[in-house]
Length: 597
Image (cartoon, rainbow, N blue to C red):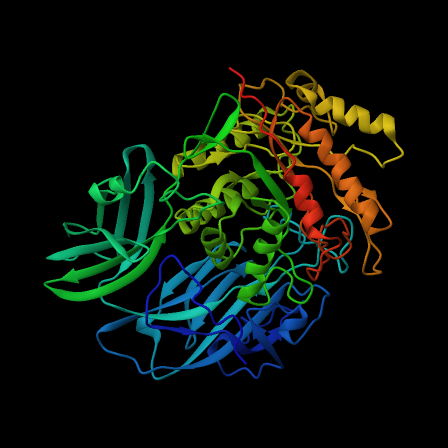
């Protein structure tokens, strides 16, 4: 049976592709003998069957074994009517952690990194009947590996969840011509009314051209053709032009916002000597993010962010959404509650989620799994993974902020250690060097160095009966002086030698009200016993935020329960814990604070 049959890369769509999800042969390799015995040659009789793209720890994989196995192997056969003038690209959405790929017994590539996509041209290794083998190594106790919330022990506990090992996003094969597009980068130049297009092809091609056509709701906006003299092209198209200008370009009719998520469709055609070589369909949103006067601006207007922390886990499938509709459900439920976006926490999410956030209008703070420790290997791995994240997700208008570091994970001594402060600053500048269109947070929570947002965590609101604790929580949030003086951990808000430079202040983790409706053992930062108390507690905590003179946005913990955490607004299987209209009514009470300066 095939699962997750939707096109896996919705911003770079081609017509000819083959989904390789479904049943694969599978084997644990606890003794690490697979390479010695050449399991990659396709002759090994694997003992299990697994349903890709679900990892062996999940119910949907068909195996559902949760104890750790660091080395696993996959194998499946592929029949192919190979065309002589075509190339074949093998794509993996994500494999956790170190993947070695073999085609017909030949090693074709190795990829390190558990959350990012990768591809390889396998044309020269293919025939009519093919064996595809994947070996995965997931060293559970290596603290230099970005692991996020994945636990290294047999059973999850605390803030740690069941580990993910192996293929957890779609695998597919794509047929292309000998000359094809490898990348298209689209940058809205909002103030100039233009879209910048940077395209690359796989090799220099004489007498080649790139045609483009941009439409909006079926109406042609602009079209053109440009010659390619090497293997790349960089052009900017004027969207202002007469048609858009007549329809109020500067209004929200053509801009992307959560309330009005307008998207432009774009078609690319690559031609050589007049012959069509490649055709790619994509889209973009026309929007701008920046900050000034202590506020985040969306499309040059102050915008208050009402985010919810989203771990991106499901009970039957862990980090892999059970179906595409699950992404839609999460976004619609969050918007139904009055949230306008999420912070994807310690996980780089599937492009299908980002596609639906683009389509439905939902802000996303993009994050990466953190490593537990600081060393040279951890530094290198995090930087490489972030380069791949931005390479893959740059074109999604929903993403407005990058969060490379969280709560000093992987930089435990950043408060006073200058080397780790250098790394925090490096990540801030590194991400800006790759992407000038979004905000970057240096260390979400505390011990901040350089940052576009002062992102603070505070769960110290207490239970309802703890009036003095709540009053202190409320007083802490009241103004700039109080909030910057507060320490929610052993560390200050800013690392030694750094201070607030006027950037917006947001409360990016708080709440976490525990409410058990499923009967499972679990925890929250505070607890309630019924639906009425839950809504009352949510309103009480939010009242402290809304009374603040300095906060210009928040991220509530959290969207759903996850395993032993029962502090979601929804249960782990996405059932509301209360009438969601009551949460929306509380979220809608907010009035924008007066902008200072």
